[in-house]
Image (tube, rainbow, N blue to C red):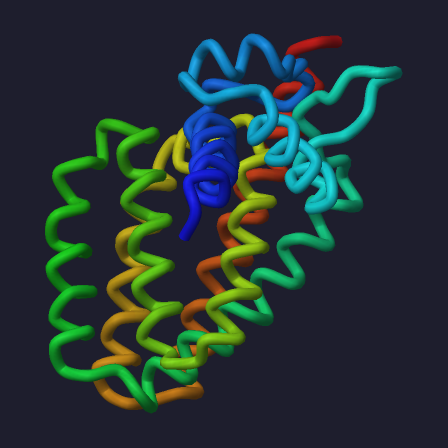
Length: 217
């Protein structure tokens, strides 16, 4: 890989990570010069990274400025529909193809995540790692690629549903059911457990959004 291509990849990854970790939130304006200074990268790869992120609908235009995109209610619903379908398929395939070592990793993740229940942001990061491990265990590179795109769009959500009271413990219980089904090689049960998990997360997010509207009135 040439130095130019490496710089392009690094700039893209750095900006994407900054959005994913909440450094830049929906509505925030991204300025080439400021990004170049922050990340120590020249403006050309920054400009190309911004164009790529705009193409992926992670950034949008506000006049001449680029801002981090946000999701309206319909877009959120569409995202969760697609996520549920693809995640369910990943769990089904993982039940068929996951190696004993991959199942062991899932169980170790699940056990470690119990220590994060009091930290929603840390648990949210662990949650993404857990789901990505299921994606990898599906052993389907095309599905993994599509799920990566879906999870990039999830970065446009300014908050995590794991902030809701009772949601962290519920999430870990749902994760346990998913792992149990994958370990048993039961594709149908794994699919159902994963879809149920996504559905409950969506309901929680809708309730969180509704409570914010009520608080603003």
